[in-house]
Each structure stands twice: as structure tokens, then as C-alpha cells.
Image (cartoon, rainbow, N blue to C red; front, side):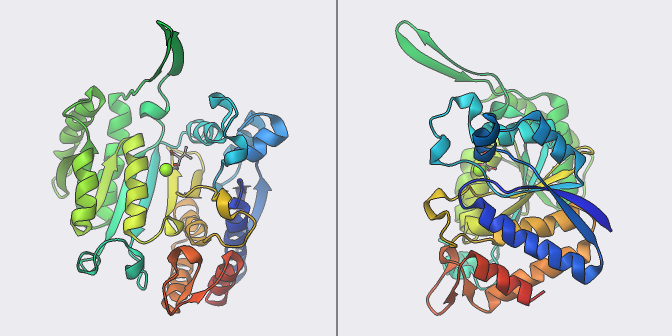
Length: 356
Ligand code: IPM
Ligand code: MG
């Protein structure tokens, strides 16, 4: 197979993890006889420094022209004071919207050997946690009008949260389809006791539920869901929710599973290339110290192989290698526990390659 991958190396500690993921992709290409070529695209802080724009159209075009996009993470204190519409995060949002990536899948499980990294009690983690969050990615408050103005001498701000029925339906269907491929349970999360967007969300989901009688369907308010996730995460299989609730719940779920440094994600649209990225940030506090955990990025590369290129065996091989590294007690600082071997970002990459 011949494929091109657009690489967005990202800011702060991010290039360190992307480098390890690329080593893994190259090893897979060699072992299975594929050719992966890379194009470099700038987004976020790097693009602000180079072009004064967090995602110039030229860089978006490079992503659209590739077969898949691998991203680390963007942002950092250096760009904290730039105007809101020029922040690194705006580049990421423009990329998601510009590529039409409305569906974001964030699977999280407790990896064997990482049970003690979870803040939950051993009784709870022993019941097993394996949850996929299906997050709507191009609507809601992230993409409604943002404005700040002055009224009666004080500053006022507003963010418009907006959803149309077709946006809910297309992500809802992905929720049901994802549940079908897993353990057959779907929980839709909203705030229908307060928000109109959530009332429409719930009504649309109920209409769809009738078409998927084989899926065990339930609804939860988002506040209750946040609580149930720490009370008994084993009750969940797939969660489908709107953009901002999905952002928040996926961070909560990642730490329930031990570390955000392990959490990968895939964003897909109707036809455009997929975007594969860890859900964590650019870790400015440890940038350049070879300390960041590259697993989330390596696992995002595994998802790229499976969801981007249909290479299931290759993807499984990467996941098995990561599993073996953890089983052998090799850990970066974020997942380190007494008795394990502490390593850095590159050391973790080496360990994965040795097991591939
Ligand atoms: C994520 C991140 C982004 C989001 C930020 C960086 C804009 O938190 O991918 O979860 O909120 O979607
Ligand atoms: Mg987030």
C-alpha cells in the first residue's frame, strides 16, 4: 500500500511524541511492505510564528490532499496573549471544520498493568473499564458565534450553542453503529432539562433508537453522567454526546483509565482524510525534557492504520506492542508506579519498536 500522511508536529513537547509515532509507522511500513510518505504541515503556535495565522489555507490544503493526518498537540504559554481569533486552538478548530470531521471517537480502557494508575478504587477498576466516547466535533458552542462587547460600562460575552437535526442525526447514527460493533450499549448524554439544543438532541436520538432495536439505549444528563463515570464506569459501553460535553467527559474518562498520556482519538467525516491525534495538550511544562508519554500518539498512529487505511493487522500489532511494553513495567513518569522501570519519551518509543 502506498499512502501519504500529513504530519502536524505541533507545539512544545508535541514534536517529541510525533517523532516516536513516525518511527512506529516506518517500522510497520517496512515489516508489512507498505510505503508511507510524509508531508509536513504547520498548525497552531508553529503556524502563528511562521505565518501569523494558526492555520493558513495552504496548510489546510496539504491536510486535505493527504490520505490521513497525524497530529500531536498545539498551543502553549507563548501564544496565550494573542487575540482569541488567532490562538493556536483556533487552527485546530478550523482544521476540524475545514476537513468536515464531525465525528470524533475517543476510546478509553484500563490497560493491563495500569490499574493502579487509576484514581478509582481497586474494587471499581476490577469490574473493568472499556468505554468509547463518540463526540460531535463540528457543531455546538465551539462553532456558534463568539462575541464580547460593552454594555452599561461593563464587558459582556456570549457564545452561541447551536445544533441542527441533521448534525445530531449523523453523529447519533455513528453512536449506534459503534455500539453495534462493541457490546451493544449506547448512552446518549445531554442537558435536556435546561438546553433547547439538548431537547432536540434527545428527540432525535429517540427517533433513531427505534431503528436500532438491537442496541440497548439510555439517556443521561451530563452532570449525572460525570458522576456515574466515577461511581461505576463498568456500566458504560458507548457514550454519544455533543462537542463540549464530549471534550469534558473524555478528559474525565482518560484519568479514570490512568493517564491522559494514553488516550488516542480519531476524527472522521463523510469522505475527507481522517485526523488522528492524542486527546492531551502540548505539555509545555516538560517540553524538551524527553519526559512526555508518546503512547497516546503511537496509539493514534495505530488508529490511523486501522480507520484511515483499513490495516487492521498492522494496527493490532502496534497495540500489542504497547500492551507488551506496559506489561514489562516500562513507564514514563505519568504512569510510573513503584517497582517499574522509568523511561523517557524516546525510551518508550524504543521499547515499542523492540516489541514490533
Ligand atoms: C481536545 C482539546 C481541544 C478541544 C482544544 C485544544 C481546542 O481539548 O481535543 O479535546 O477542546 O476540542
Ligand atoms: Mg479536550
